[in-house]
Length: 134
Image (cartoon, rainbow, N blue to C red; front, side, top):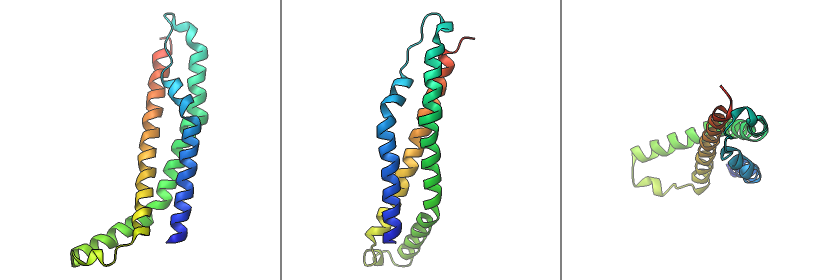
């Protein structure tokens, strides 16, 4: 489990570093203002499309893939912990495993990142539609 925790921590770090590097571009793209004449928004729309394609979508794909990879172990840990707790609620503290708990915490962090990245993509898509002439 220690090796899995190390791998999961490294993968979460990669996602976090990429998001921190790309955050300002994603944020700026979400905050682009529309011109009064929407026909002149083409460069802004192109910028949003670029951010979606090269920043937002890769983050979503990476975080979801990592979440799915770690999910079976996380479910196994949760089921085992629930079983122990249901058999004897006081016994759970005797077998507390901080490594397994940290592993689950990392999985939940990846799921939270995935949700955040999806929300960002939705906002980018909405901004693109707002800027697009009808």
